[in-house]
Length: 227
Image (cartoon, rainbow, N blue to C red; front, top):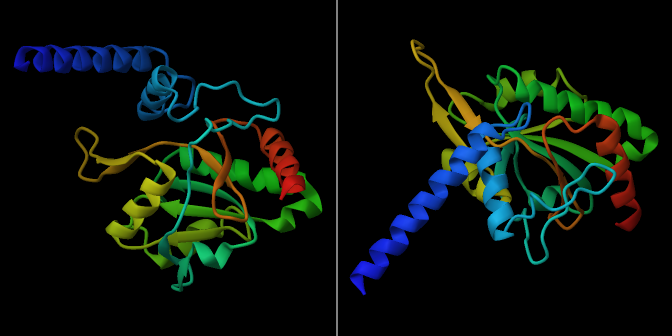
């Protein structure tokens, strides 16, 4: 029995190592290694639906039975404590990142802003939200300065390390502190999806990195008709 368990564990390690290798060499442009790995695992397990055919509008449909989103308690960029109930009844476009992010985060937040502009008056029903994965540096004051650069209605959310971890778990967001070689500072490695959240606080669709603003606007508009 013990030998069978060891063999099964060895097979699992080899399988994950193989998936990691495929993820490394098969990453899409702008896709982090973590996202590529999760996408490969999703293709094997069917747990997250990341390899399901994307709708023509650009969103990724979740696998049946998979639920993302849920309760959280965080602090907005004005210093006010908020929960998911403060956004009840509204659609959200949510992105997890950090203010020191050198490239991907500004790009994706700019995409959200452009998508809202493309939606015209329909954008009034959507609240853009940026949740930090770096609460150590991203204070409410830092978030206020950062979100003001992208969209006047963009809400920045931070909190304690535990509060951020809870929110990240609800959305199955990967993040980890990394320190580049020969650097005294650190960066955050993190998954990079834009989440379309319904008025009930549950994710209805998500968008891969580099999805066009037009595709996000089209998919969001289509979802709004169903709310």
